[in-house]
Amino acid sequence: MTLEVWESELSGFKKNLTQIRERAATNSQVLSLTRKQAEVAKVTILIKVLESRRKTIAAGRGLRAFWKDGIGLGPVLLESGIGFVGTALITHNKNGAFSAGLGVAHQGVQARGEVDWVVNISTFSIIPESEMPTGPGWVKWPGLFAALHLLKNRAENGVPLGDLNNITESLMETKLLKFIRRFLTGTTNLIIP
Image 1: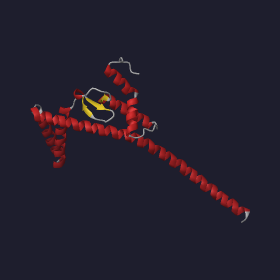
Image 2: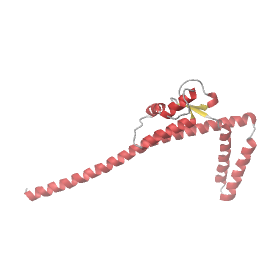
Image 3: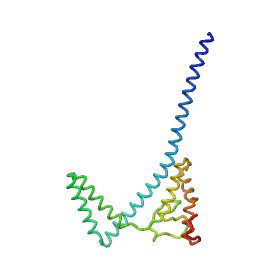
Image 4: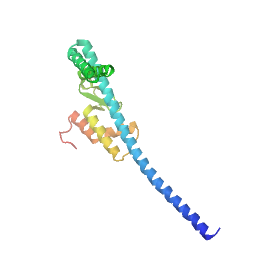
């Protein structure tokens, strides 16, 4: 092989190597973004699951309350009927109207069961605050929600959160939850750290 052929081969090899480096850099950026999105998704899913569980428990409590005393059932049924008729008149869709009526009824039942909630950090059990047992690990719902959003912000900044156990440990170490715990036990003033 002549010198020109070797130089041509070397030039082609350098071009291929440059393209591989560029693709690797692009793939690295995509992988980094995907990791960050996965970390954010962990907290987002946890928030949605807890919120869904809380709404389900509230709806069950509301249904039991209606079943037990029947007070307040009339307005819920009236709102449901109005939702059904209003949607039917606007959309001329029976299925959509039925769905809207049931949705309004479900919201009314759920609203009847709403109370102040507490969550056990280690098990993610959700119970009404009035039924909270004594012991560590219980946090009011708004405090947990705020702490989860702090974790979500950390994940958006690229901090890896790990698995559910690591997220639980991070929640327990969150300054906001420490403050809430101290405030609930009466060992601190209203000064936020």
